[in-house]
Length: 61
Image (cartoon, rainbow, N blue to C red; front, side, top):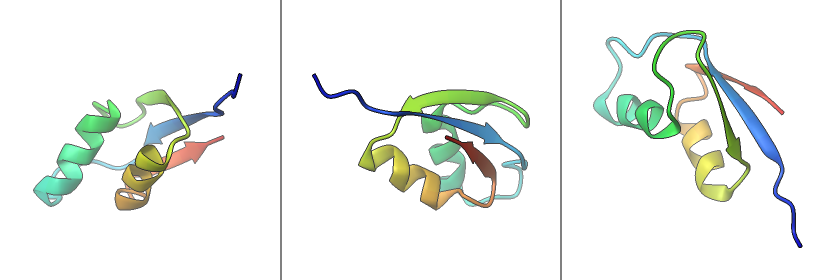
């Protein structure tokens, strides 16, 4: 069975005054506030979301 690696994502900057698509991406990742950490499987779709808002988050492998 193939085991996907987990990736932790922490929001480090506010989504206030950001474009709507970046706000939606943070919501889709499950991030609600600065300092909030979520864990996801490392998939191409999640990696794409991370790339879109990389200036607002910090990734912990």
